[in-house]
Image (cartoon, rainbow, N blue to C red):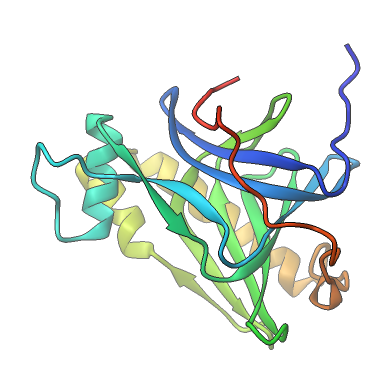
Length: 213
């Protein structure tokens, strides 16, 4: 069967999946779906589902440890959260990251963000991946720095992933930085000037957001 592209303005669900179990769910507006690249829009205020520690066991003080323990025990519950910054997600087929462009409330371009994650798996109405803790912050002047290195270290220390996997995650981040420094797409493209369609309503999770296709 021929794969059908999603249309601009369509709402899909970006699902993080860990060890065959849904980890989080984000409703996203499709901006572009072509040539092995999917671009999604998640405006500020979008409500999404995040994993939290169940009340039957103590919650670790350190976020990295909490995440690692959830991944190991596989006992998380879901909680509603509101996304705090308007963000465009640019996801390339075969890449272990998403490149995010973000804006302040006054629509001024904030900068880029590299979200390290598993390569995506495309379904009929969902895009499945898994966040891998480590991130990169890129300011509007293109200076950059690692984010959440302590969380990646906690995943290794607690045994959620091994050091080889952690090294692969960091290598993917360095590949994204090489693209930045070489002014390769998407950094060479005018996404900082992009505006969402004013007729788009905020994306909302469907009733079957927990279903894994």
